[in-house]
Amino acid sequence: MEEFELRNQILLGEDSTRQFKREPSADNKMAGEIVAFANSGGGRIFIGVEKDGSIYGLSGGDAEKIGEDMAKVAWDNVRPPFSIFSKSVPTSDGIVVVISIPDGSAKPYCDNKGVYWVKNGPDKRRVQSPEELSRLFQLGERLYAESQAVAASTLEDFDHERFARFYESKYSESTPDRREDPVGYQQTLENLELLDSDRMTVAGLLLFGRRLPVLLPEMKIDAVWFKGIERASTEWHDQRSITGTLAEQFDEGMGFLKRWNARVQGEGSFNQPGRLEISETVFEELLVNALVHRDYFIKDSIKVFIFDDRIEIRSPGKLPNSLTVDQIRRGVRRSRNVLLASFAPDLLNFRGIGSGIVRALKIWPSIHWINDTESEEVMATIELNRK
Image 1 (cartoon, rainbow, N blue to C red):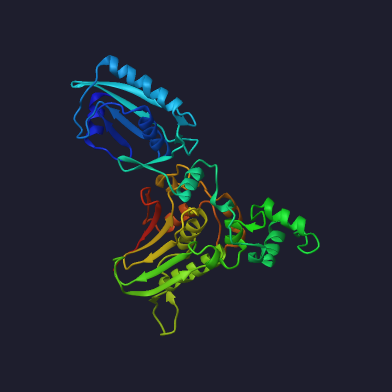
Image 2: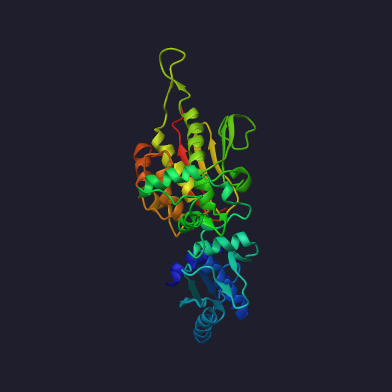
């Protein structure tokens, strides 16, 4: 980085990827700053820069010592130990030390007091809720929401007949008899991560469960067909809260979208079915992605909002495993819910999984995604051809 690039970066101001410091804080505070960046996608600390963006500047000796000290803090005061990169950038106002902190590959990180930090705009924020900490472990691929046991569930909440049909179709063999060989049957469910110590897992319930509105009340679809183009509108054509297994949510969610899609009456008799505005394949692929790849640590619903000029499908959680919107558009897939992704093609009534997003874009190019990392939501928007 040269002075010109440095000054351009400073002009952008502080945010969740850039932080200015006139001089380093105490070691424990700097460890917290490093932890927050490592847990939140990485970023840079510019030492020798005032909060207003003016360069305070450092001497050569001070800059060298700061680089060495920060590397030591990252290694000694961060758990697990973390490597950072420092560069001294000379300017006409003195030297600025740029500390580059990569996105951590062994999340979650904490300081030497066991405190977990994440970025909150230009500042850092202590992680306090168990749910948020679980999501950090998930980002580090050390914990998976789909494999978590649901406390209030039992084997009575499992649809054994549906599972038996699925198992025989997928593996070309029957399951152990539930009554004659209960140990073997339970072991089969545990091996597939559908059961954990007599309690159903999130995946077990989402795939084969009963009583989902009671056991997993937030894991549903809230669908609204608004009148107009504003989400704040108090008028709508239709509104549904769709619960049940993934297959049931998919079928009912598609039914909701199909009713909108077939609203345009074709020429002919009054009773003639309406013509489709958008191929159902587009809806299938976006809805499957929302159901299978959402973050199930976040207790919120998928939102399907239909407006006069667009359709929004909002999924809880950020894109998984460093996936980007550009990669989505090229057909790159990374799943946070491996089990759900592997079973979905056998249980959901749709035409496939894999190159679906690419296929949807070929059919309807006006699809856009926003990965809102602050609100932890991914929104797919289908722009409509307004007349």
